[in-house]
Length: 290
Image (tube, rainbow, N blue to C red; front, side, top):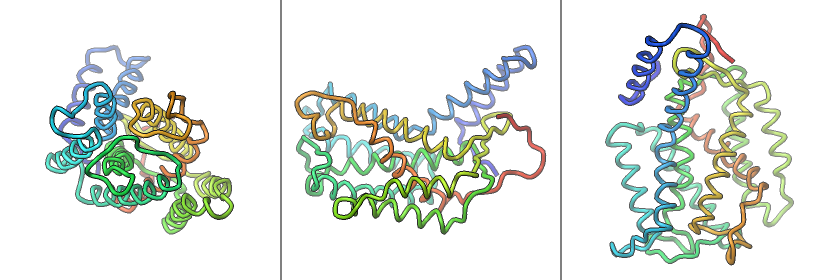
């Protein structure tokens, strides 16, 4: 059963009102469907969008007059956003638990990667562990929040979904490799191949408004990873964190990082499936659109 928040219900209600005033068929229905898709995507990005807005805002307006360092302000703001989403039932407790796990998983990786010099946080903070400000874990949590919310908002169903245990093994191997490749040969290409073999036949079926649409799940993974890469470029441009070579003058994040985010996003997706177990597409005749 698809669960809605009041805003999602209002989006659908408004879309029905628009359709009732437009000619039946043709491009009008497709345009309304696309508009609803965009609005619900934006709603699913609430946590990540809010964090990205605050990262950009604090580049230009320092929170120091409030007695807070930039990273501490971002941490407290992220905590307030997360609490508000639970209080207003925009996320379930089960989703929040998985997002918390991904937060911890991400922070552990941040501690290792910053110590290895993969990237740095150039500013001071009170709320930090070693060289890692605690707001950074919420950037991973934002990915988990998006995937959890979009699974529910679009009532995602799957065909030819692989066994859950196999996806867990893949996610664990990806996570271990993020650490291990500093000491032993990097197996990320083998992990890309394993991802391809595991999900090649998997299709995600999602309801936007009136119809179910479908997409190869691997394409969905790539699109999400691409938007995360765009967000990371904004984050480094704002100097919230920096990669080697970005200290003197900002340069775009290497496109190679897209592969890293692709793999890391799979970890988040698998964690979300522990709450929203992948359901098969409805057998009976719901309208389909490509």
